[in-house]
Length: 411
Ligand code: GDD
Image (cartoon, rainbow, N blue to C red; front, side):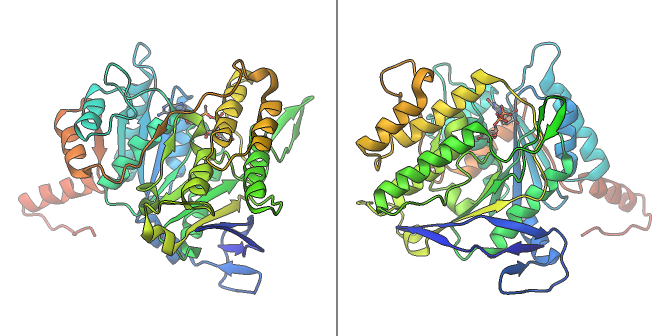
């Protein structure tokens, strides 16, 4: 892949935010120049083997999930965390059927679990991590909550990198590109604490019967504006470096995933920035993670080649997402009266209370005993299934061996 070098990097304490980098060629020929980095497919494939892609899904069209699953490169493991309906028609069962078929054909490693599985809630409880549980001991609704489950399963597979892909994407090949972009980011990273966030080149909309290739969504544009304002008022130098405040499509190293706090639902992505600014920025007082401070935390923002076409979920959903996002800025340790006032003006009628409530914040998952957590799921959970890579191939080989037939060992 040929990818632009970042023209500028904003340094805020231990956090390094690289400016936007465009994908110049998805498949390149090894020709480097001072403005672009060439990353070979071998290097990218090497990252794939250590990467799990988590797909949070809640009642999406089954054809869309099927396309997304089929687009993810074989060498990555796939983890589907479903919060879909289980009453007739049992959407979760349909999702599991699609995965079973795909595994039969491809032998790719795929894990699936249901967010509301009581044994999952119990496994978190037993692990001492009850921050995402409701009063009945089940995992709460929420995309972020689903992502935390996915990250725990990725850790149980020993993965070094964890990426996310939404299940409602209409263009499977764009999902394939997202995974390539994640891997390219990790190939460029110099710190074990890094994150790759994608900026869609276009988000097409139908306007008066024509396809219009829009660049920005309303929520993203506003969230970026306030994250940048937060940074600018802290440093005294205006910046527009943050362009991926709401990046649902993002990936991070497991080392970074282990030390992050997570905000609930859809506020998870903008809160990544707020948390990193608060904990690793210029005004940090207590250093909780000295290793990360000395290595630095790198954030790559990559502009995709493909446009992003997904399900539109309506005005109320957009307003909730905006409210969740701006709450993270409002309650940042770094937020001053001026920024708070601007946020209140921006929210206007969307805000029903005098000031925005705090989002629920969930602490790092690094302290959870992963193997105990997974063993509990393996023994008790009704919805957890792990389709191993090459499982059927190994069964065939075993049968051939027992029958004394010639067989070929797979690697
Ligand atoms: N497991 C799980 N649990 N998944 C969920 C839940 C839940 O409670 N709620 C939603 N999802 C899944 C959806 O099925 C979809 O695959 C993904 O999470 C994103 O949810 P959408 O409802 O499609 O969000 P969106 O398209 O409006 O927003 C996306 O893009 C934004 C950037 O523009 C999300 O990824 C946002 O987080 C992101 O900020």
